[in-house]
Image (cartoon, rainbow, N blue to C red; front, side):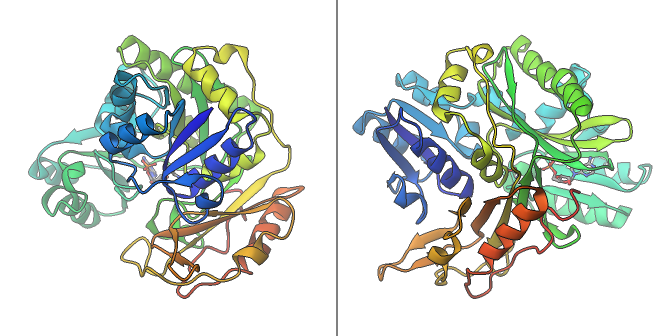
Length: 422
Ligand code: AMP
Ligand code: GLY
């Protein structure tokens, strides 16, 4: 089988690593990939959001299955275009991907189907949002409607903070058209977990829990990022809570999408807060998380291609997922300045040494190979150092020991990944 993997971040490196192990895979292509993925796949320089370019590539390389990592091409309709072209592709179509592409759509869907989430209001005009601030309870949460790379959420303790967030989104357009509409919602408290499932639009197959760390700095301080680290399983997720999440949230949202004529096939990712009143949806993503994929896929023991095919064929009820019982921890090394402006082209040392120990992986995100052969940074999140251990503490120690062997100028990382079990 000839597979095309779309994307070039840490999640896609983990996907490439896992797909490579499948006996079903003969050739693996990746667009655009990165320096790490290049060791596992034939990288082609087509950007992940160039849907027409990717379709041309799929025709040229006679691709049997396309796997889409990031949300942008899914929300742009890559699945619809590939299907029209006669290609098999893993992921939701454009209408189903709106669950992530528009928080307004997502929240209204949850409300229509009484799926537990924070209470909210939608605003189309900045002046209406400002006037609501006078009567609102604090803290509250301001969210841009559209895609903003995990950065479009502000938790505001005062009206002044909320006003700044609204101005940035709706008037200064820091997230572009993603800020044309905003949501202001109730601030929830509790541990946060990520629960992902495969779904064929009918059945769901839940994966083990994971937790990520979205804030830049230790102790959950500093700005929100795409994710500074992750671990799996999630100690906060007991079997009873898992059952509630499965029945009251995942099964119901899959059903809601089906009855609204947007059947969802692919990976459905629920970002949840475990509140005193039970689990509540913070957001849905329509793909693997990054860096959740790094910790889930290194623990997954079964064949990923078979799970993806069962999803596409509507046979998820006939398969199962098997897991390594050992926990995994992923520590992200980011460029200095992230999530703001970052330097590029900084040489990375120690990559070979870092993976000498067994069950340790360095998944590349923002890396490229320079002309002189050295691996250099391309900005943002750079590497996801991932390790298994007999327990969470050992997995964490092993990931940090490996990370300590790697250096590049300006590298920043959190020192408390998986430390509290959140
Ligand atoms: P989201 O992109 O919607 O998952 O939001 C990013 C992060 O903001 C989440 O991981 C939470 O930590 C936080 N967040 C989002 N919505 C809420 C909420 N209603 N209450 C408290 N924190 C929230
Ligand atoms: N780690 C959060 C995300 O992938 O959106």
